[in-house]
Image (cartoon, rainbow, N blue to C red; front, top):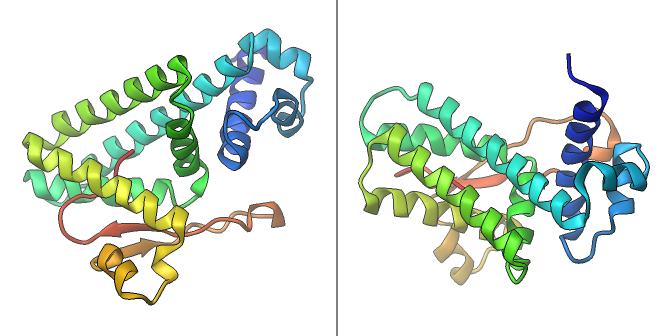
Length: 207
């Protein structure tokens, strides 16, 4: 059984993912995360020391979920070729970030890379994803690069709403991309979910 501190830390971290995904690192006060978690700001500071520690914990938690989803996707691949495993991992990632919180947290982390600790945490998270993709798929570096690159394109399409534009320049970016619809969550507070794009060809999703 988890101790109270461990349980509250996990609760605050999950809340931090949601709150930082909405308003980013620089614009988010710790009090907003505390309110989301239903605990006091003072207790959040006891658990994480400062806002930076809280954001880094949220980003690490994000990448833990990304790795778990990719690993599960690899297990569900219908074949053993690198292409088949990458495609299965891509689908798993797209399903994971159909709830935009994890996707937006990564975007906000990129925008906050002027903070060395955030940059280091983002690099470590990306490194862990790349290593996992390499190990589970057996793909060469070029295929892994495409996987990551298409994942970033998916982020761009979703955050910019490009899939809803009927223009030639937007279609140049979205052609060949499909959507994974999010699973509806109970309650009105989660109505902001949106679909995420993925490609049908080689595996394109990743942090």
